[in-house]
Image (cartoon, rainbow, N blue to C red; front, top):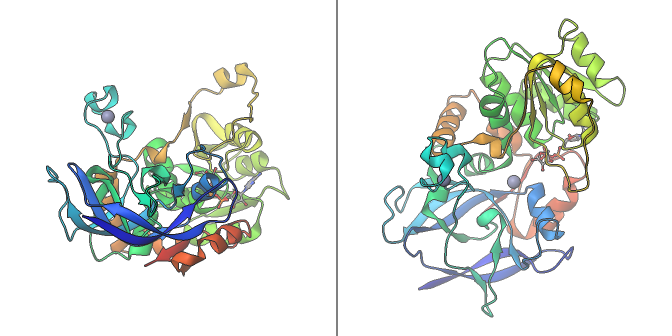
Amino acid sequence: MTHQVRAVVARGKGAPVSLETIVVPDPGPGEALVKVEACGVCHTDLHYREGGINDDFPFLLGHEAAGVVESVGEGVTDVAPGDFVILNWRAVCGNCRACRRGRPQYCFNTHNAKQKMTLLDGTELSPALGIGAFAEKTLVAAGQCTKVDRAASAAAAGLLGCGVMAGIGAAINTGNVGRGDSVAVIGCGGVGDAAIAGARLAGAARIIAVDIDDRKLEKARSLGATHTVNSKESDAVEAIRELTGGFGADVVIEAVGRPETYKQAFYGRDLAGTVVLVGVPTPEMKLELPLLDVFGRGGSLKSSWYGDCLPSRDFPMLIDLYLQGRLDLDAFVTETIALEDVEKAFERMHGGDVLRSVVVF
Ligand code: APR
Ligand code: ZN
Ligand code: ZN
């Protein structure tokens, strides 16, 4: 059997997205069909639409989603129909060299549904990040579904599926922020703000938010920043040092993805401190640093892919903390919109006043 549902499709490079009817197959072995309840609009969706990721048009966009499992295919035991799940793009294989060494958060062989969703004329769709959740129903690998407490709001929970998890994980997993640490976060969009929330959860004593937009800094403060720096008005490195006894922060998280902000992170960090790059650079960007400083300052320079998260470990835990009032995921939902408003949400993304627009079905 197949299902015909409404979905947001990007048909060609740079063209506005369109609302289409797509065909979703019933789940085969190892797959799950999910009735999507909410899906956030992420920059990566826009990058797909602009042809910035690859040329496999048409794309079925959307990937920060939560919903309810409608049916599962043969052999699926981890989730069952009726489960409330967050979709993830790290369904671990259990067999690659990372998984075999007990480091599934680095799995090098993650998987997606094998069957294809299509347009009505049979054209195969490429789901964004192997998910494709700007659709009333989507087909994923069962391992992409992580069961969490049904009491959570779908709009807030879905955001853990990508950007918010990337930020929180950059702080608590990659940066290993601990009680009493000083942390600076450069770039306070959805990802940076999530890093701030993560640093607060981990017990950071001082959290310095750096951005070039005062509105972002205000929001960062509400999520846990203890100090803010507008790096258009003052030098980011000097300001971070001033706020940390002249030394720099224990952990600096770069959530912009540019060489100049990476350098600020590099020099805004204390000796033997940690830099975490979670912002995603573009292919032409180059970084130049005195190698002697890389050596002499010690510590570690890390990158954080998807917050080094393990969905089965991190999603239920973070949802529990959210339900206890210790992690304000609702603060990341700026507005809820309808499926037909995704294109408008892309336009608003550059305005600076939206952390996440979330499609609610
Ligand atoms: N210095 C400091 N902050 C900056 C600078 C700069 N030079 N340039 C931009 N910013 C700020 C913006 O003002 C904004 O608040 O960085 C923030 C970026 O936020 P968003 O555009 O909302 O992006 P976000 O979703 O948070 O993602 C940030 O992480 O996952 C990656 O691909 C993503 O590279 C992107 C980054
Ligand atoms: Zn693996
Ligand atoms: Zn995303």
